[in-house]
Length: 161
Image (cartoon, rainbow, N blue to C red; front, side, top):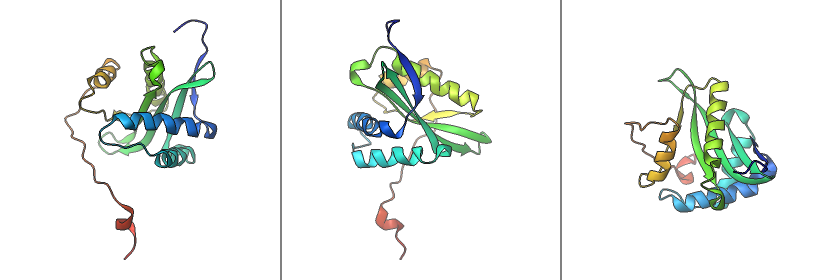
C-alpha cells in the first residue's frame, strides 16, 4: 500500500448495499456450500442494517471506493457466559487481494470486539481453502474440535397447518 492512498474502515451504509451484495455473490461463487443469489444477499444485509443489535458490516474504502467488507453477527454463548461474534463474511475484491486489506479489516473487527467486550469471535472457512485457514491462524484464530452441521429450513415447513 502506498502512503498516498486514502484507506478508511467505516460502517457500511444503505447506499453500499448493491455493491456489497455483488461482493457476497463473488464469495459464494467460490464456496461449495453456497450459491450466489443477489436478492438473498440484499435481504440478509438489510436485516443487519435495520437492527444494529444483530451485527455490523464494515467496509474498507480506498480513495472512496469499496475494496473489502467484513460482516459480524452478534449472539450469546452460554459456554462463555456473554456476547460473542460470528464472523460471517470477509471479502476483498479480487483485484485488491494481497495488499493487506483483509488483515486491516480483520484487525478492525477484532479491535471492535475487544472495545465492546465480546468474549469470542467464531468463523467457518471452507476445508480445502488452506489459504484462508492460514490467514486466520496468522491472526490468532485456532481450529475448533467442533464440527459444523446445518439443517436448512424451507419456507413450506414454517407455515402453520
